[in-house]
Length: 186
Image 1: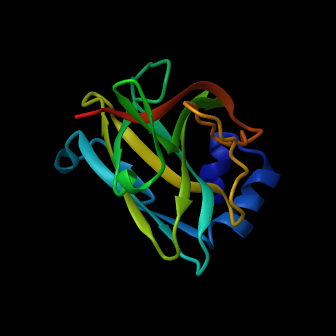
Image 2: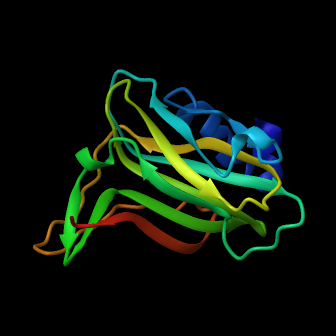
């Protein structure tokens, strides 16, 4: 894992912090997928689990890839849904429902495209499946790694008809785009 994270360009102190404090608390399975296998299709999921006896907050998962012949401006994987997201905090804005406990960031680390997924909360021993899709022309491997988490709830600002999300940007990541999971009211 150290070799994979360093090939991404993360600083040595960031890698050692991930291994010491994050990895024992959160598991992501699988750790990687090969996209050139026929049996994966273009939609699948990975699972994030809280391995502790305490709730975890602001759980960040880093996704990156080693691809062949794909040139894109953002990470070519789309997060479609997160199991259990309806029980998380939601805010209505007109006809749209925004899940305020899920933040999706596209970014770069040393010119390599990444995606950072932040879940606001994982209960004790809870696992969540994250459903995604990707470009069928994409080849190579996608890697998944727990990146950051906290045992303390964030101090989220509360105002009528608005929402706030606490996000601490990892210093190694250049942020390009942020998004939320949203759906239309039925």
